[in-house]
Image 1: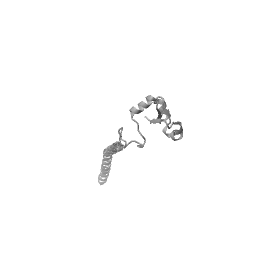
Image 2 (image 1 turned 30 degrees about the vertical axis):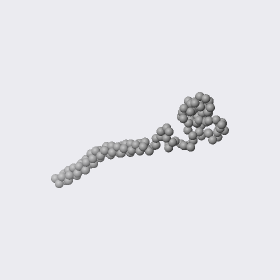
Image 3 (image 1 turned 45 degrees about the vertical axis):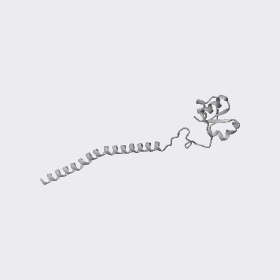
Image 4 (image 1 turned 90 degrees about the vertical axis):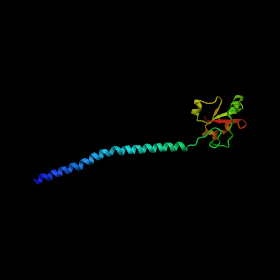
Length: 133
């Protein structure tokens, strides 16, 4: 009779030890993945929000954000008048593929990265109006 009790106790002990471990690990695993997923989503949202705030926005006429502020700017009306009179050279500094897609009629295309080598193609006595968009 003593042997029967010991065997029963051992079986009961084994069952009780294994049962909480498998049930507990099954209950914890989904929460771990949910918490990791939420953490990644919050990190991504934080990165998106801080990136959009750090990029400066410029408005037309605000020289603080304009590159090469020492270069003279021309008003749209004056550029249109020079185009109509034919008194200016319009220089498209975009890549050739963008120029082929659309450009101001009569404009020259010298991509900005080729400009130092091809500067002699321009007449320095004429008004040169560059554009890139």
